[in-house]
Image (cartoon, rainbow, N blue to C red; front, top):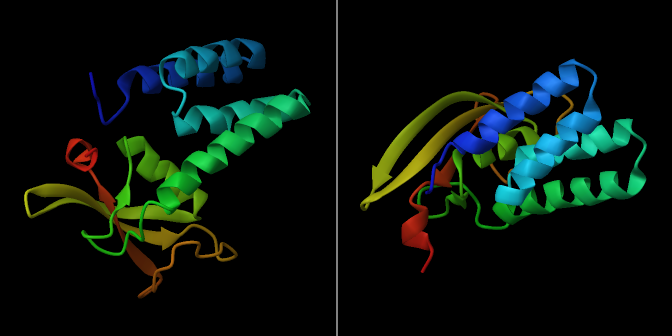
Length: 159
């Protein structure tokens, strides 16, 4: 069943973090692989996977997971502009919104659920995380803040 908050994946990621806290990257990768068996497109798991494989100096797996991570985020970036409801970015789950914002160097200031024409959108007000981050969003920043829209009614956009 569809869950916008990916509860299975979130629970498994908690276990991944506990394994990493105990300095057990191999065990952590076992949990990440379990996530991938159920949801290969869970972005956060690929972020952790490529970082673990970097630490383990496994270049092939590092490159693979880094590639998947970046391509999943690029698919969101290429879905639209995010500038308004009509051009909202398309995401499958809420966690993708947060991964996308971090990937672009932004931090969430405020999140709102807005409706227009019987559709729902997440309206995210963002600020730049670090002064040296590039604004990958094609947005005009006003007072160092950007507004980005994400589509939430995925069933309506599947056709």
